[in-house]
Structures are given as C-alpha cells and as structure tokens.
Amino acid sequence: MAKPSLPQGTRDFGPDTVRKRNYIFNTIRNVFELYSFQPLETPAMENIETLMGKYGEEGNQLIFKILKRGEHEKTGEADLALRYDLTVPLARVVAEYKNELPKFFKRYQIQPVWRADRPARGRFREFYQCDVDVLGSRSMVVESELCSAMSAALEKLGFDDFTIRVNHRQALTGMLDRANVPTDKHGDALVALDKLGKIGRDGVMQEFLSRGIAAESATELLSFFEGIASLEHVFRNVPDEVIEQAGSRSLNSTVLGRLLEFVGDHETGARGVDELRQILEFAVAGNIDARIKIDPMLARGLSYYTGTIMEIDVEGIGSLGGGGRYDNLVGMFSSQSVPACGFSLGLERIIVVMTERNMFPSDLASAPAEVMVTIWDDDSIRDSIALASELRRAGLRVDLYPEADKIGKQFKYASLRGIPFVVVMGADEKTRGEVALKDLRSGEQRSIARDDVALAVGEALAKD
Image (cartoon, rainbow, N blue to C red; front, side):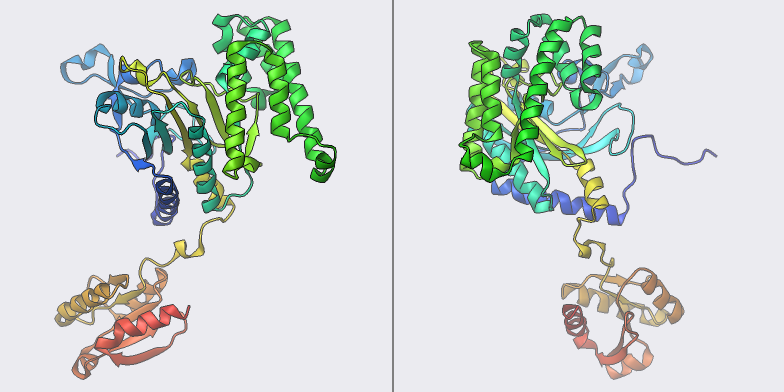
C-alpha cells in the first residue's frame, strides 16, 4: 500500500489554521464591503483559450492544464485549465454578463488559484487570492479608492509597516523609448526591470544583453534608477522639518518631477506621469499619501496591464500583493472595451507573516467548546443529549461526549481538548434536578440546578 502524501505545493489545514484564515477572510470582506465592493465567485477551471496568452511568457508556462477526457484522452491535448488568477475570469464574466451588470462594477473575490510553480517559503501551487476590482471608469479616483481599501484592510489586520508602490506602464513606455529600447523589445525590458530588486544592477544588465537590448539603453535606464535611489536615500536621512524649512517638495512629487524630465515631450510617457500625479493628489485627499510611494522601477511582468501598476511591500518581507489597470483585457473577450483596474492580495503570505509576527487575536486559539456534557451511563444518553441541546440554544459552544465511559476518561478528554467546563448528570443529580459543574482550570466543582447551567457557565466565562 502506497504511503499517503500530499502533492508538492499543497497543504492540509487543521482547525487552528482554518480559524486564522477565516479571521483574515472575514476582516478583509468587512473592509471591502465598507467600500461598496460586492462578492463574486467563478469556477475553478476555465477553457484553456480563456487563460493562455494573458500572463506573458513566464505566466503561460505556469498554467495547470487539464487533459481532454474520454475518447480524446490519448491525444495528450488540453482543453481546460485551472484558474491562474482571479482577474482573467472576472474579465470573462464582464464580457458575458455586461448587460446585467451596473455601469461601475465593483467586486471582490476570495478563492483559490493554481500555478505550476516551484514551491518555496510562502509560495505554493494551490493558494487563495483576494482581489478587488472596479470596471467601467478610467478615472484615477479608482486607483485611489483601491489603494485606500487595501490600506484599510491591512491596517485592520494589524500591519503598520507597509508601502504601496505605484508606477505607470505608459510612463515606462516613455522611459524605454527615450532610452532607445526598440518597441518590440519593450516586453523583454519590462521583464528584466521587474527583477531589479531580486538580481541587482549587474543581473539586470546581463538580462538586457541576453534579450538583445543594447548596453547603452540599459546603462541609461539603470543610471536613472540609481538617481531615484539616491533621492530616496536623501529623503530618508534628512529630517522632515529640514525639508519643510527648505521648501522642498515631498519625495513622491520630486520623483514625479525627475520622471517627467526623463520622458520629456514623449506624449504617452507624459500622460502616464500626469496620471501618477492625479493618484498622488487623490491619495492626499484620502489621507493615505503616507502609504504611497511613486516608484519608476516598478514594472510587474503581466502583459495585460495598460496603465497604473501597484504593489504592496512590507518591510523585511517583500510583496504581499499587487495590481494595476487593464483597460484592454475585457475587450479580448468582447468587441466592447471596458476600462478596469484591480488589486490582488497574497493571502497565503499574509497568513505566514501574521503567524510569524504573532498578529492574530489570542482568542482565535480558544477551545473547540466552552462546555462538555458527559454521559453517565447508557440509560442517561437521552438526558445528556437534551441538556447539550438546551445549552446550545442558550448560545454556548457545547461538546457532547459520544458514549458512556468512565467519568475520569471523559474529564481527561475534555482537559486535553482545552474545554474549560464539564457537566456531569449522574443518577443522584438527576433525582435532585441538579448537575455537577466542574471548572477544569481551577478544579472547583459545585452542584447547581439543571435549569441554571447555561447561566452559570455564561457568568463564569464573562469573568475571564
């Protein structure tokens, strides 16, 4: 018999972990609904043509394909695929049901996705994503609202050391054109630039050269980025009051100035920079500008982004999610173009980080029940079931020991499970209309009227 084992990159979740996950899911849902986002769910699988070609060359290789079944199985061909993300299925939904949806469709979605990736710390082949998207508007108010919702959700979970990095694909296009990167190499350049934080300047230079991009172009771009890094160093090390006294602008506005200077009169690039300026202005109005960092080095590799791109970074941890504007994606499934922008949280990484930092409320690790009802003997089973039902109707979490057993064993079982109270109704207690209530934490045991059990347990729990 083969030894049972999990597929690599997947996990089983025990009760404690599920409680943590539900806490995060519920917290995030509550925040998103404050912003009027509505829930949506889509199937685990999509037609393969729905997914292929939407994620760039690297993403396409990570799609889990499902082989044809039945008489077509021998062909080795695939016609379905597991969901890679939640954005492309959303675009399909909007294309299919556009006449039934409101003018501005705001949705959130919390469901698992699958990627044929190499498992690593915090990286799995099956994992949950949490997306919020707004469709139907090209206004930068959308980006501002998404950043605000994400900030509120993370703050509600207890994070206080995160930054939302923001850039614009059109600004990047202007930069690449100004650096004389050929248009047909823009995708290659963005893939390389997206790795700057991982492999450094030398690594990106080699990546440029291997992709057929001139060293002069790479040098010009990397020099610009090094200048931005120097600016950040200055602003980090100069007190705010000194900057204010000197009449200097904020780091974000200074970076925008440098970026606009670099793209010059490049129409597309200048439009991208202006939209970044609008996002920053709206972030100030929404009081979230302290969370925003205009970052010209942010590239994000997904090919469907058309405008703003965003990523959440936590100090010492890295990315916890990202997103951007994808105005052309819905049009790939329909003749009608629909503007869209969205953000995706990496829930699995959030769970890992919150666990490592002890950020979960202590009561999540509470006992599976507040009180356990014992079974004295076979003749008392019905009485114990009735008592357990009464206590549950009173709002208590109740475990019923499933069989008549030695009372000592029943107490031991409750103790091992961390259940604080145990109720015993033996023959003598039944005759008197009483039960014995024992507090396993203190060892105190007392007799009380059967009808007063729920009140007595509730009062004892309230004192904790």
